[in-house]
Length: 436
Image 1 (cartoon, rainbow, N blue to C red):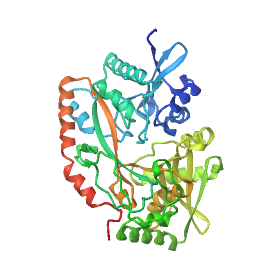
Image 2 (image 1 turned 180 degrees about the vertical axis):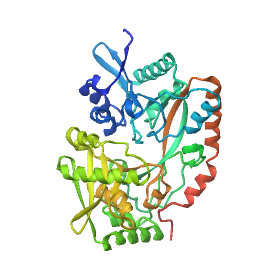
Image 3 (image 1 turned 45 degrees about the horizontal axis):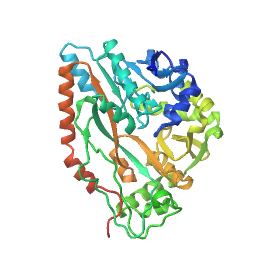
């Protein structure tokens, strides 16, 4: 059997969309953000393009006319829009008179959502893809290669190839109601791994494991799922599983929004009107500018999403007196089992509106529609108060310079060791009810 042929593409449009999406659908952890239409819209809208510092270099492996493996790769002249922070590494290179940029990144631009990054027919093809990535980076004399927010299969292939692993934390909500007669278990398992990392070289702990928190006996639940798990019957049943102070706080926050006269409506897929997409972008752009930054994504990107990938989106719009004042955009997996909190913005200030638009409305929708998991995006310990629990995310890194590779490896080992106190802290802050 002949070896696969490696090809480098300067744009997603050079790869057949049907072949790419078919390969993606066969993966264990696909997401809408890896769809060909999503990646192509990033480029076509100039959101992720050479002009914005994201030069596409997609890598594919072919055996004859069959696409065996593929991944999105970008040459980066900066580290913005990645959410796995390596600013300290770049600064160290600069201090020693070395160039850290350009570097190669296997990632979805501006999208810190865990999932498949290395599309492959089988484990052998995935291993060949990693080897091809590293070989290409060596040929191009790049400083480094970074695979961000990979699926377990990606990380295993990278580790087998000798890449270094780094763990960060996100906060995810699971639609799992308790089994009767169980107590709360909020501490991660013994031996869990952890890591650190924030911008500017700050050392902030991040939990490196999923946490299973079971509410107490007596909570209501709904229809069963495989493995004997059950989903929440409604939002009130979910609230009943939380500790008294968390339950009280959430109800107070929701009451403030309601008493301010704010009401919500939602639209999904093709039912999202053009005017609603336009209003959403006004909110999204304003929020970025209020924080002193231009928005990463251009209006044309969302126009492409409305046209080419409408089924992946759920939009909430907050109105007061019949006038829209805020919105939040949620993405959905192909089978609608996973929801991803993505963007939000407001044109008027209302106390606690952010929590209602970004957490409580989406969680209530997820419960009503049987969504199994809601991912709240990068970072944010405040999400634990809304029952989004810590979940490990992992990236893989290769550095060409041997001395810097050794230094980074030692740094990553110290990161893993520094999390024990943080683990205890998180365990003490579980939002779920203990025996009362």
